[in-house]
Structure formats: C-alpha cells, structure tokens
Length: 114
Image 1 (cartoon, rainbow, N blue to C red):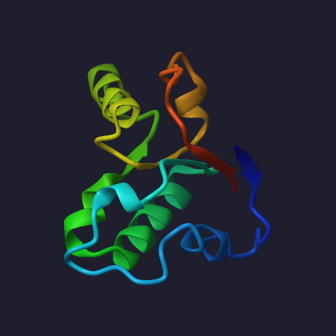
Image 2 (tube, one colour; image 1 turned 90 degrees about the vertical axis):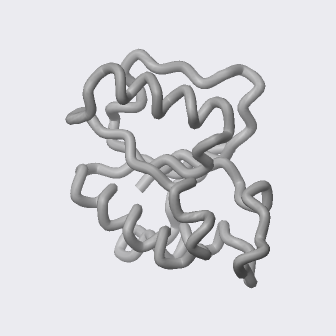
C-alpha cells in the first residue's frame, strides 16, 4: 500500500500514527509495520530517523534506518537485504532506494511519500 502524506507541513504527524499507541521494553518488533518513507533531502531523512527513534523504546530504535546515496554500494546492498529480510522495519530514503534495488516479492509493507 502506498500513501501520500496528509500533513506535508509536518509529516511526522502522519508517520507517528503508524506506531501502536503504547510501547515499552517488552514490545515485540513484529508489532511495527514495515515501512518505506521517501523524502526530498538527506537532511529530511536524518530528521525523520531521529524523531522516529525517539518515539520507540530503546530496543526497537535500530529497526529504523536511512538509505541514502552517500552510502557505499556494499552498505546499500547490506541495508536493502536487511530491509527485505525484516531485520530493518522502517527505512527512510530519498530517491536512492529506487535506483537499482528491488523489494523481495513477498515483502508486505507500507510506502509513504513526503
């Protein structure tokens, strides 16, 4: 499923709504939806990563990562593989994710465009 953000002036309002209302140190990772967020700039990705991680319990924070053009090709491949396997659940990216990387056909996720 792909969605356009409804609050473009403050997209974090839409993003935070994907999280369960309550999470704590015992919240399992599988409660989070796999999501791919597209941003216009690397700086916007960084802000989103920082904000999303602050909303999550400590043990879930590394499930949120950024995929950007400045990563080495090896790092991009590793990150994309981790996302396809479900080891990373939330990926914030610019159009770099659309350049030569394919989702596993069995991957169920939500896509959001900023």
